Image (cartoon, rainbow, N blue to C red):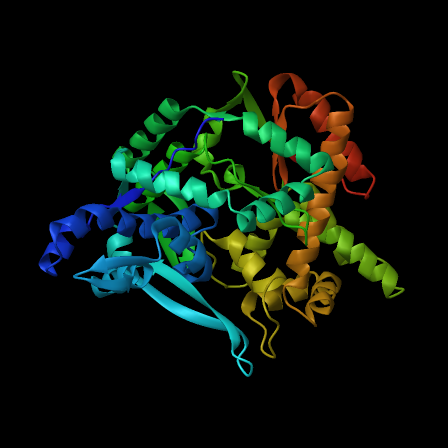
Length: 441
């Protein structure tokens, strides 16, 4: 079996060796230990790769025991044994590279508790970008130890438990995913052009402030990680609470999807327009049935707007006509301010207008959220996974269409399978009384 390569990244604005020399460390320590500083930084970057730096304000959890197993538990400094993980993170914090905080959990009364550490790379160093360190003897040694540690019983049990959970249609999706390749040359050319042209990226809200984004060095470094890792790091995670699948396919920047292929054939994306608002119609009808009320006129109008993929444009026009400002983040704002937010005594402007235009649908949303504001998101994701994965994907395999992958509410198929896949999607949605607009991308 081919040994997995270990990618380690270096922040462009950080010279670890020079910093350690300034602190008076000997050259032997610097030569042997500096790679471990980059390894911790890489572990943080890896979490951004799997999730997002937007999540949890940029803080990610790194398992201390696993980190210590990989890089060592102690190091000798002038005849004294020091905790290497503690030393590295203390130095990086002193240099302004990272921030971290501890979270203790467990039974304090009996002295049984663990300390989880959450790390974040500071904006100053993250925005400077980072680059892949060329393979060398120290990386090879670190990788060999890392592989050795992964063979221990405690890690093998976790891997076995994960594999046992991947069954049925999920096992098929993981198998297909393992065969999908990213054209690294083509993706690199796309990324270079985007950087040179300062291409506009999706607008986001950062701490409530709308931020216009363009391709910069930090984003280019982050996107480059996907090119470096996609073909070798085939992580595949199932959220067993909702049934959703998360992998490098779901986090891959959209600009790279055109460079994906399987056995030399590229994919076509079939995307469901206004999918999450549309799926809310299922919850709405169940809510009406449970409360013994007829489906209201506003509920029918809402569903029709979603089925024709016009909900966002219609509601945006409605909001603006009522003198409320909208932004390029309108779609995510609708989720954040209506569907997934905590209800307060004073409704926000989006809630008031949605309630005015779709009163019974708004009542349904509020009722579902009254115990937990996350329940709407949880139920919509569960319905989505059931339709896209359990129903549609299973039927495709049964009909001999095997080379495809899903990204939440979309299905990516080969050109020859596009027509039949489109038909199957419509047939399965019809069973839940929905007629979605399916867009080809």
